[in-house]
Length: 262
Image (cartoon, rainbow, N blue to C red):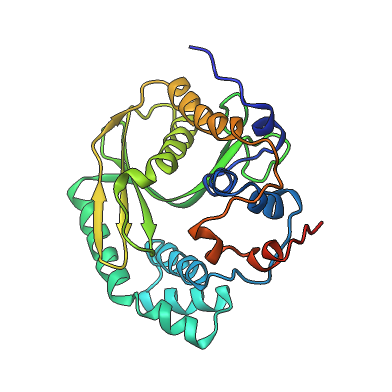
């Protein structure tokens, strides 16, 4: 099986991530502001993103062995949070504590031989692993929250932490397509991957069934086909596509005023 060729727009504006391709799909002008003009904001307008990012840091520190109090303190300081935001982050303490306990039990129960925590992955246009920040070579990239290698089996259990509202599992299909590709490229011996979501607001963990991943090419082609499909419907990167997402867009004010920064 040959690797699918990326659409010219996809090839031109690499490297790609799940959030970047979602931005292009949602609104070309949002993509234009963020990834072409590269307008930087001091802090996201959406406070939920700030809080969610900080909670991810808490989990990263705690899963890596720091005690819970230190994990919350370090995450809040590193994220430069306001007192209101710190209070919001601390509201997740019971959920984080419960997850850490479940994680430790899982390690013993299933003989986890290795855990990967908040690891950066990237591959080039030929599907080969490259450094995450190698913008000249990286084609798609992303950060995996938690991946656990199961005992003697060539299988991985992958979990993504979510602080937002709970969605149907199909909502995360594209994200997990990217993640399976990253893991298979970096760890060729993997033959199966289970993906799941840890919803912190409800302390619920939902997982799918084991997906066999014997070869890299089908995983690569599924990701590229999705990106090509999105790119094929774009004729003007400055075109505005309105919807519910406009209320949460960091570039909302300039966009509504008809500005074209950059």
